[in-house]
Image (cartoon, rainbow, N blue to C red; front, side, top):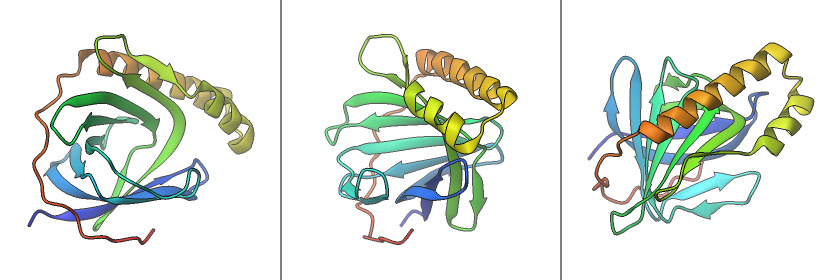
Length: 169
């Protein structure tokens, strides 16, 4: 059985807002790749808890303020490339944590990647007091995310067993 871990997404103040279980597909010095599977439960303080409908292969770089998701339908069809702008992830035992800085990029089908959630970023600027320098850092990371999504070559759909139900934050 592959190793599993808990992924925890926090806001800029460190308060968790979403958490789920995932398999570890790859782990080296600069990168951790996880796979979430259909049927897995996600605790979500903002939108309410939900069950994953797709396979989600997530790439977390320990030296980049981005994480990239390859979203595959249960039949193996690529649905979306999604990139989050956030903190560098922290791996502590079987728990991976990162702060979400709200700006995201989505690429679906043959269209160009799109920058999303600028309204959420504007609200976070006010709520968390993002400095002008930090805002520029996040916007530069978003530009990197747009380029990454446009040039990304996704892997094949993951093949992993269902995860045990673990509903702990």
